[in-house]
Amino acid sequence: MPASQVAEWAGHSIAMLLNTDAKCIEGQEQEAKKKIESVFGSAGEDDSSADADGPGAE
Image (cartoon, rainbow, N blue to C red; front, top):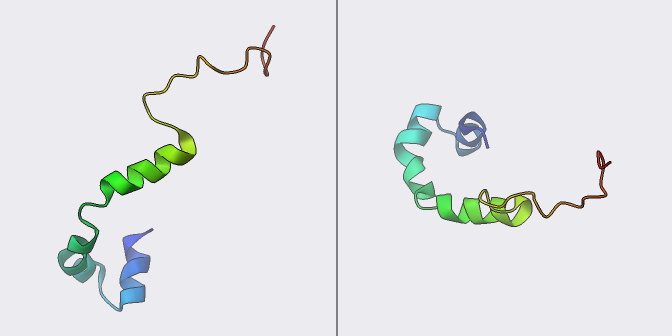
């Protein structure tokens, strides 16, 4: 979410949002990473389990 959009919704300038409200999102990085990994998989996973008969297989 762009900071400019959040600031507009909150009725703040971007500077005020980042200086005042940013502390509210502190600590949410791990939760965001978990959500992303649940959709796309872990960054450490390899693609070796891909179907060998898929596109490009000879």
